[in-house]
Image 1 (cartoon, rainbow over the protein chains, first blue to last red):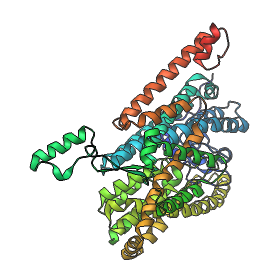
Image 2: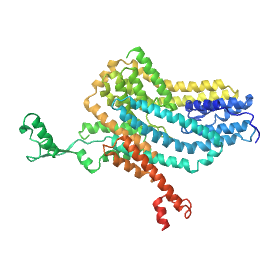
Image 3: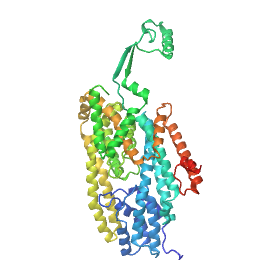
Length: 304
Length: 268
């Protein structure tokens, strides 16, 4: 191999990485992330090409259609950097090769990036932080913001460097084991947590009374005839602990019945219904507005 | 709200708008945006609680492919401004969310406008590329990002200058059946976000893990962290077992069936 005439410095690669933060800034219906991709490549293009013709050609190359999950664009940028560097040093890398690598990688990588970031890391971090935040604890938002951005920048930088070093080899690695394992592990984790979230956070309750039963004497705490003072409280608590009812009338709501069957069943069924509707191409927005209407109507009817 | 608060709220809204498209720092997520607006308005606790509650609803709101979810940036900013002006503190969180979600849906229109306006911007980049004009491309990229910031900052400013009495009168004039009904609806709306996510992830292979999670979460003593530990452990066990199953059967049936039990049965 001949000595390289021009090479990208670490500083160039850091600039590209920082600029890749703004990848989606000019997202448009025509060529999607093309403007951001070109914007990110500018420090490298400036370093590698000196004539105006070469620079113009490189800029146009990276204004072609591009769209992927924004974080996994980093390994693609890394590979593109390596290819452009080879090209600037005289290797026979043509436009089609560069475009081919970009297009070839963006689809499969988006398939990895979307579930890992949007559907595993963000919901898990978000749920954890939100459970702090709902009690007014500022640690929740701080935890979310700091952890997310540490994970994100680490990912952007290391995968871009990995792509740069691996060059074209990375496309072969995509069919290899590691990436698949990570995706599989993430989807297992994600599905588990989703199951837990549906149980804990989807609230569907039917507080309407199904039955009212007058309990027989001795099955409930006889509040009128308790001893006075602390002794009375003690008696009441021990009676309650022994299973006596607080009220002389036992009220069973629809919710009690559902809970004794499977806790969270209604939430589960509602989630399945939403999944079904979404698969039938019903817009999520229609479903959301519909659920508000259903909530109001059923509440007015006294069912919910 | 005083002038300083309004200026700061508009700045937060601008950040949220830029992030709504960039999706990097997450300033548009309810946890961050609502908290920041709460802080600049001097009601941090209410903002944090609102952010937490709305985060739970907005969890699965991600624009993937053709599916379009409500605009998280506008939902966060609008609900936080409404909560701050309503003067009910954290109590008003569920009402503020219920009022803000339809607004966030309407905000999708602005998203479409911004993404269409970006088309002529990239055509400007094409022209600049002909002349290798780096500076112009960079300037156009920033112009597009600023436009996305204005997409949220302008509605936020409009919400800010509506007199506080109008907002609180509106909230107070809503009858109890309506606000209660909307909170009940809000409790159910969470399911839509989860359903979006499940539809993306679900395969026959990972469905069982959903049900394990669902059943274990009914034990209310188990914290989210505890559940997370169980989930990670199960994922590792599963990956290791499927690898072992795969390598045992590797010689006989190339590739294996991906099902450890099936491979063991095949060996008999």
